[in-house]
Length: 427
Image (cartoon, rainbow, N blue to C red; front, side, top):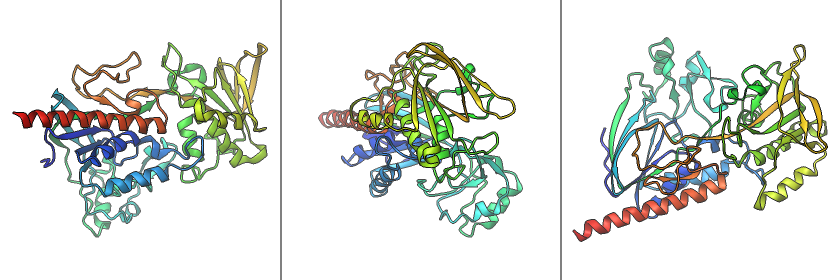
């Protein structure tokens, strides 16, 4: 597989979320050649799965649409999806990168008409709704997907569904014969924008995420509240599809804990404050949100939003680290046990649904990357690394700060490319 633009003057960006897109665009709009790799079928990362941003409660579609428009209009960026870096060798100014590209089984002829999805019958857990619902094995990840092409899940290959999808496509876009490919790229600078992954809530045993269906994560709740999500925006309990109106939000679920994640994940407090407003919108005055917290970290411009939520009569705050969760066998309701540290009294509070404000774990490793990458005690990239971290690869950040950090990473990469160009010119 050839790559016509990869040279020592190319900047390689690994990760196509909001940070990777930003870094790639900033470098490309400065005239640099950029390759943007993303391991999933579409760009956008976790930002594309948000229902709304905090604190303005606006929709991510706006920011993503602007970035996609910039991307489509810039010939300096080459986007490769379903691509993962398997090895990097060399040093600044001259990296050799091995990339594995997985088959999409649908080629560039795709017009996103959806005929292939109509033809197939098998379903898989929907990865873009965190498995809360099912999607066909031929699917478009979401409405903002880029590239705007369907994907045929590998589980369909060799089955009748693959043949049905191919027969239904009048553009000859379905190609079950696609094979994995390996690319060898050259780059002068590498930006690592691999984002973050949610901490495994099942490891927090006292909270029963793997035992109690009505204990969910903040990411799952975010998708549930989205009108385009698995429940059409209704807050429904997974156990019985009954509307939940009395909801507990548990902060620091896996964060600031030596047994799990040592660091503060930064976004969790604001995410839960935002989600209490989803409850108000969905349930009105009948909705009740209770936030169990150690500290509320709402700094700078977020303080006003925090104070607004504090004044909301449908939201209450209990300063406590919940000790454990039990489930009522008949109702499926959840009983939270702990001690309120303001007044120091024990509680056993009942809720319809529990939302764990899950921590941010790094997604840095997984490839054979050079030893000069320096990681901190939590596994995030430190500034001294020769490969530049961008956004949440460098530590927990919200969307706004991720964009700022990615812009800085792009500028550092441009400096490396310019220096290399100057050295070559002087030889």
